[in-house]
Length: 263
Image 1 (cartoon, rainbow, N blue to C red):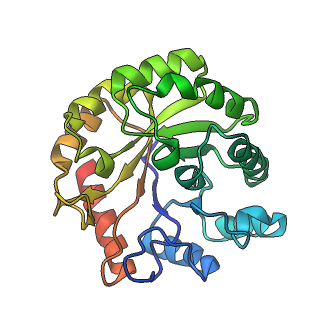
Image 2 (cartoon, one colour; image 1 turned 180 degrees about the vertical axis):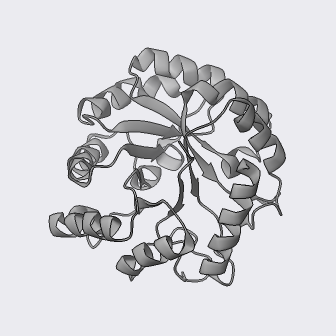
Image 3 (cartoon, one colour; image 1 turned 45 degrees about the vertical axis):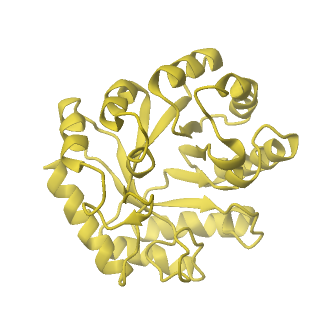
């Protein structure tokens, strides 16, 4: 089984200046573009502020997502909810929002819901016990959907967090860019988190924590892929990279870069 390669929704389209995460105005066009560039899937997302125009809130548009994915030979795998960055996941209002989102994701046949636990939902080495009940509540409503935790938490604490939750549906999303600026050794983290990792976000960052072109920042991708090859990583990747001046050209270069590392 080959590693599937995807891209975050909106990264194949031009965005406003200094807006990395941006929902595309012509979201339908991205299905065709993703197919043309050579991606296996698009990673859909919701914004930090609820956007009622996002197709995930419209049943008819969800069905259109499925039709377009089939038409352009794209898998439906991941959905990332950025809303929890700006809204505490521990609050009842946010959890009700997630329950409604999960209901729609079931219709879309999404396999993984990614929860980026930063900002208002920041999961840390010190506070992770406070989130156990919250994640358990989310799991009760997730049915077959896996919950992927994206966080800068250390391996030891994440493993303890998972034990407290006591569910095989809770797994980890490893983000190469977000970990490179930490004081810990991110490559050692990858080794110790490996058996819990369900998916990997590929991006590069510089000393100023800015998203930069792959292989021009601080991430040592040779080390990353040495570890993945040694462990025979068979799961998937999503590019969460900068667009550059030409999003399509950048995406093609990124796929070529990743395939070389995997070969």
